[in-house]
Length: 308
Image 1 (cartoon, rainbow, N blue to C red):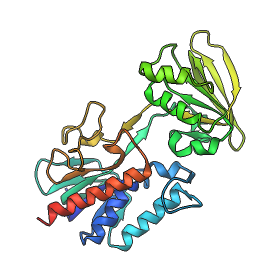
Image 2 (image 1 turned 180 degrees about the horizontal axis):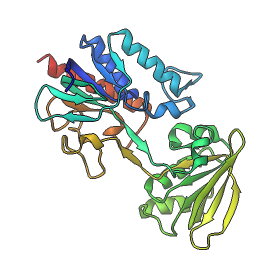
Image 3 (image 1 turned 90 degrees about the vertical axis):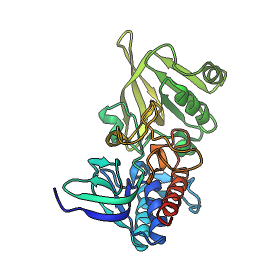
């Protein structure tokens, strides 16, 4: 095994939670190691314009915000490496972290690996990512004032996002592959009573069409197989998120959906010295600003542990 390098703090993940944790732990004098993973900057790197992050009245792109946060962390002494963590051992301190050919130990670990939105897996979905295809109505709904959009999904999240989008959009189509919803009765009732919402049931998106941006979708009927085309300006995926916690299974306490359990009001996990922040433990808010806030909390929790 390769010779290990020891750090006071290792941060696994590099979205707004991880990089905020890096800024705070760096300023506390811990010179943390940030292992960025296979998507440096996290989900914000596939977000074009961010208008709801405080301090940017004219907005900022996701990649630019992440670049700025990374440089800020490095300025104070964080070491940032483009490396994917493949294995961890939290059974004893110092904890061990294995990357691609590298081996590290740390007195404290901050996990900020985030959660990945589930996608349909069709080619046109990738093509229009950030160009009319989104997985966050709260983030991007504002851009669809007086436009027609589609929300894909049949759970509470889909109906909640669909209802939210009616604040901006002229028309919201909710597409679901079955004729029954998994959503709660109250959410279904609320959506059905909204005059801007129309349900397209027993349908799946076969293809997303457009030029530079989305202009429509081809819908396939799951019963007859027939394909119809409908004009829309945006497509919102609301088929769930998957927390990026695979490598932590058996090492740390997870909930039934795979999110990391933390002590309420803190970022502490069931392992002393291991903290979790951002979307990897937040299945409710999932915003850049809340992730950054919890990254600050994780850094302060880690600092308190290491200083005592």
